[in-house]
Image (tube, rainbow, N blue to C red; front, side):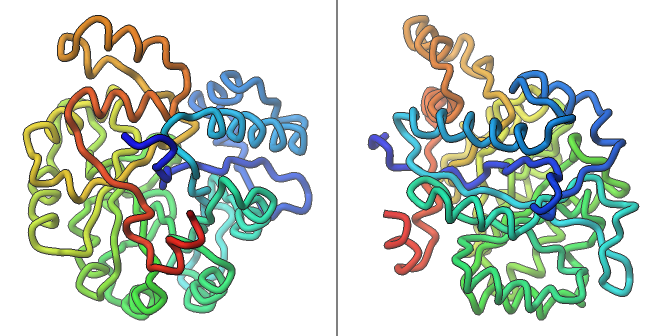
Length: 327
């Protein structure tokens, strides 16, 4: 792996509302075990939001700049839920990281960050927001259908997908179960629902390599293989595949090298990166090096490489102007 050659396409810009950043978090999510664990892990306090946001960003910058393999990260926003009139439904929104905050952070650190704003196609101004984000320098658009409560296969969203295709903005969509945010309909994470976007010419990136996310049952592997063969504009990121509940997909991918050209690098930061997938599959010396590697970006590279999993980088998908901007 070339030194500092990778872009991490899947890094979350977590933020608490501080009065002017446009972010939101529900009291329900604040009380959730996963969120409380992440606050504890990063030594963050929900009672001091501005300080917490600053510390989260400092931790991310320190780890990213120390990486031996990853030079840049796409900071992902998180749009909210919208009602049938396309207006924000805060009652059903657990977490919102505003696109303005994403762009503000990227502008402050253009040497290491790229913008991955989030747009729920249900919102009334979705097409205008696509144009605004594209003009502001977004390199992809992120969505989490389970938590944002929209069906990616709804044909009413064809104009949204056409706008993404016209602006050459990849659509990074969550796949499988979603545990960190409370989704009402987990079936919205079925990758087959992304077929409409693919047929409208959008470059689709299926998060977590289409892992179902329920331990040892990977029901979406056939879809991953089909889409990789059928659609030249289909890709999948390898984010979170070292997590115990997605480990089976990581091991499946070892046996399907024909898919590797469609895989791109991602971590799902700030989630931890585990090395259990390589136990018994690499020599002790190599395993010990992975154990000693505390940098999550580098450990993700080393674990996947140890399994002979080949992958590319988001920079390979960007148009020439985007590639120039990330060099």
